[in-house]
Image 1 (spheres, rainbow, N blue to C red):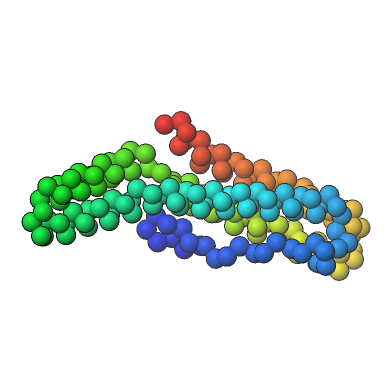
Image 2: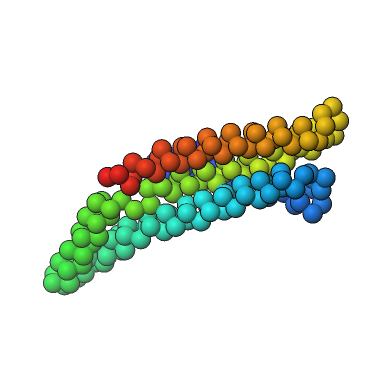
Length: 168
């Protein structure tokens, strides 16, 4: 994980497992749980993209309009320059008050964590089955418990970080 300014950069999330060839002996209940995790991860990825668009929706036009105001001022077109500067100011004020896109990093992090969880569970399944020490039902039960605990943890930090934004 790398933080530059207020933006969180993360490596690409692991790809979803191919259930048709890889882990074909995995119980259906565990496969369903992994699919749910990837579905939840995709939802968070979509939310992250939406939040990023919201973040730039007012900043980019305000920047372009402010630059245009400067250019028109340079050419002594003061009325247009004043109007453009006023519009840019209004956009900046709205952006400062509304603060759109604050959840982008949170959703991006959740997406990555969920994909990583599913990849880890899939790998642990393969390792334990190849190891041959435990029965497959025991392995599946342990992995389902791990999934439940991790989903609870991820859900908790999402709720803790989203709730203050809606209570303002």
